Length: 327
Image (tube, rainbow, N blue to C red; front, side, top):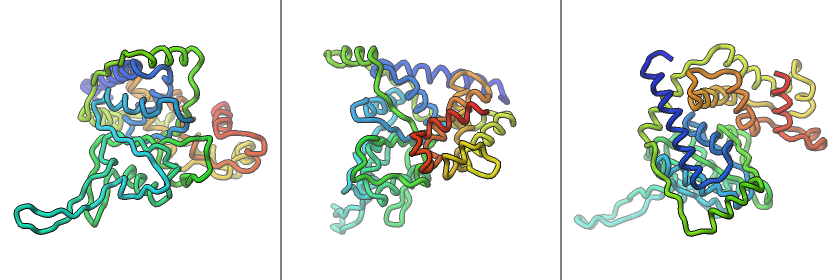
C-alpha cells in the first residue's frame, strides 16, 4: 500500500467485516461461505445471482445484511405481469394546490434502495428483467426523458429457483455476465438445521446492531480499487479465464465440454474479488490463492456447456474445479 493511512484503512475494513459477520450470525445459522461471498461482492461493487430452493432464508439473510450495514433494503417479487415501471417508478398526474394546474410527478420505484432483492428474477419477461439489469449496470434510471441517479452504494441480489423451470424466462448469457458472483445456496447440515429449529421457534428475536454506514462502505469500495496487484496474480487470473475458451490450444476436456468460455469481465471480477478478499483477511495485496478462492462463483455462470457435458452429467462446477487442478 502507498501510505500508512491506507494500511490503517485495510485493518479497519477487516474489522468491520468481522463485526458485520458477527451481527448476521445472530440471525443466520451456518452459510458462512455464502455470507462471505455476498459481502465480498458488495465491497467490490458487484452484484450477485443466488440460486437455491425456497425456504433457505435468502430474504432474511439479505435484510439482516442491510440492517447490520444501516442500508435501505427493498424486495421485489418478480411475476409474469410485472412491468418495468413497477421496478423503476412511474409518473403520476397530480394537481398543484396553489395554481390548480395538473402536472407530472415521478414516483420512485423499489429499485431506489441501497440493497435490492430481486426475488425469482427468471419469472418475469425480458422487458422487465432488462429494466433492472440496466439499473445494475448504469446505477441510474431513465423515465420520461429524465435520468435519476440511484443511491450509492447500490447492490442487487437476484434469486432463482433451480427446481421449477416451467413458465420462466431464463436470463440471456449477456445479462448473466453482469452478475459478479453466481452463488449456490445448499441445504443446511443436520446440526445447523437443529439449531435453526431451536432458535426460530421461540419468542426471542435477536437484536442486530448497525456496525457500518453507507459513507464508510463507499470509502472501503474506493480503497479496494486502490489496492495494488502483482503482475503474476493478474497473469494467473487472465490465463484462467483464457483456459475456459475452447480454441486450438485448449485443454482437451475444455474442447469436449464447453461451447463458449468466459469473457474479459470474468478477469476483471476475479481481480476485484481477490482484492476484496485480501482486504477482508487483512492483507495489503492479493495473491493467487485469493483468485482461486473466488474462481468458482465468478466463472460458474460465464461458461456455456455443450451436449457432451449434459450427456456425461458434467456440471459447470465440475469443469471449473478440474480446470483449477491443472493450474
